[in-house]
Length: 126
Image (cartoon, rainbow, N blue to C red):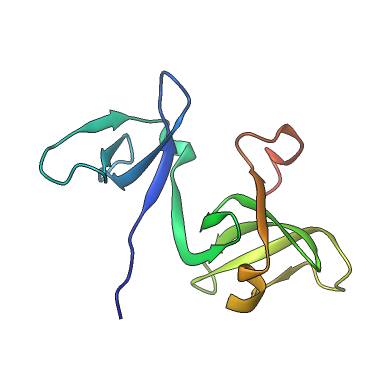
């Protein structure tokens, strides 16, 4: 089984998303497109998000993504008490505040934003 380790963070100057591997202090992202060099980008450490290992209709799903499913809209987050990625529901038909979303659920979802770029959800998980 092949695992894909991927992170993203916002460039400190352009505020564009940079994808790759973070430095130990999360201040830099090393470009994953160029494995033959040490291209690095200075990023905002607080915006570093990890790929959760699942993809949806929009592509890779990262922590802090806002996803929309047939059940509702929620924010993907890492639950350190349970050592797992989960969804905190914002608007839902479910009667739960948080849940695990099975792989089939992720595949049917779309990413509609993230907590850093969507003002409405900026402080949602704090």
